Image 1 (tube, rainbow, N blue to C red):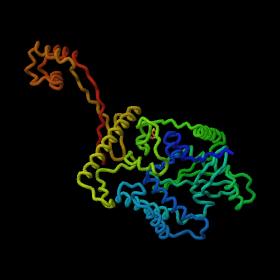
Image 2: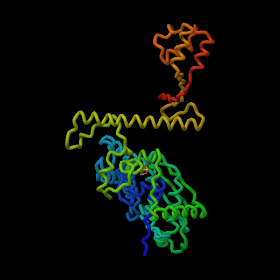
Image 3: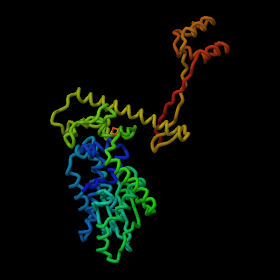
Image 4: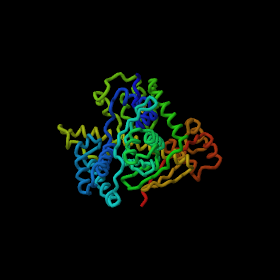
Length: 415
Ligand code: SF4
């Protein structure tokens, strides 16, 4: 019997982002480097599971939740979590406590026991072993459930594939149906009544309607098509500015190395990833990591690291500048505002005189050589602004010139 393909929303997301990346992660089984935002989100999810644990009769107090958070947080070091420094990890720790305190202040008086928390479901369907982790399920009565997903990133937005996947799982899973029937034996069919993303940093909940069956069917056909491509071994890379910049596998990717990866699989390959640009770019203000390194870094090593950090930041800043200019042009903006900065596109015109001989002959002819101490591009261009140079000479000069316009981005801090 052919084994079902192990599949999930995140696996599908990775395949769609880049099949080669999927191959590194799930065929070669090379884990990605730790990311602080996953570690942070994982601890906060554990705390939510602890708070709403349906097997406990009473909800924990804020103090108990904070102790639980501390214990979970301290299970790993700052490096294992993927933070760039101890200071950054401490800031993450403080933010985690703040979010829990704020969550209690807003919600503690209305805590109710859910149907389940952090429910790991594996649904065998259409040749797939579909794995999902449902953060929280609430029973609304009449066979209707509410799916709640906690978000801990900077922002939260509608992610249709994730919503569709949840709906498909909840409405098809025999395990979830059995769980609901324990509460309400009259239920014949489970339906999603509400889908929500709860953004913990801002304590805001985004609620979505159940998707029509037609949309779920179309989505499911796309899932099955992706699964077919994986089974067929289609893993051609789809490089792109954004995905490659943050990809842990860049050091071993055929797009960058020019050859197929034949190295070790699994955790032993992790060392090969080190040195790849990772999602955490240390800033020049980060303290050197001597605090936990056994060997003290020499001044030269620190200097080399800082030079690399500086170069990396500059190249990122230049890339960001290009992206901002492109977006502003698409929107036909010449000026736009962030929350702290104002950006303005400035156009700088440059005049070039390629045929130096012709220019010099022209200046000689009109006795203008003395006006240019050294005839350079800029001193000749200055003649075009000189009120003493006759208009017809300026016209002749212009005919020898080519102009180019360079776009620059002027940034100014707003109050
Ligand atoms: S570096 Fe780019 S092309 Fe290569 S695996 Fe990563 S995302 Fe895909």
